[in-house]
Image (cartoon, rainbow, N blue to C red):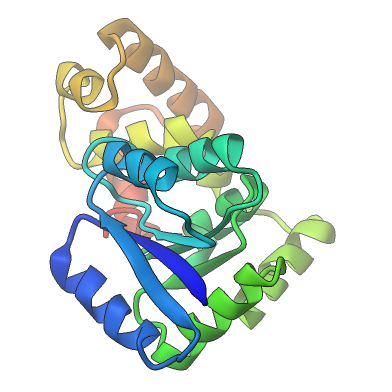
Length: 209
């Protein structure tokens, strides 16, 4: 039996995924969590084979959770199930050790197949991701936000929705000075000059879902 942990702050999403996984006789949901903190506690307490996590969690980024889980339990397979399109976070997630990246409009057979693949030690790669990696290999020009670190991307998204630097610092557990430094790096790396341009870029590239 494959034991799964679901990590998402929306009950309706967890319930939907639980129902989809229930179509497989050899998969059971062992535990659920709404935050990174809860997920880490559950991972220590429960015997789990696969974690299915969201990117957007209330206390910290799902990418941070992915890295923490892999550091603490290297053999744990982690699948990212997100509302964000694959071209935004998928490559980052796989580089951080994810066993696959799925969007929340994935049907039950796809999610079940991904869990089976991950539990067996493999990686579930969609055709879209295969094409994405091919573009990287041949050096095709990538979107400007691909130049950003995971943390810089998170700061960019908060700036884009109008959060103040002080508020961003509070949400990400950083000092305002550090957030200011991140903002300067974002502007430099992306060739932008203001928060308005950051917001426009984020909107045009579907970073604000």
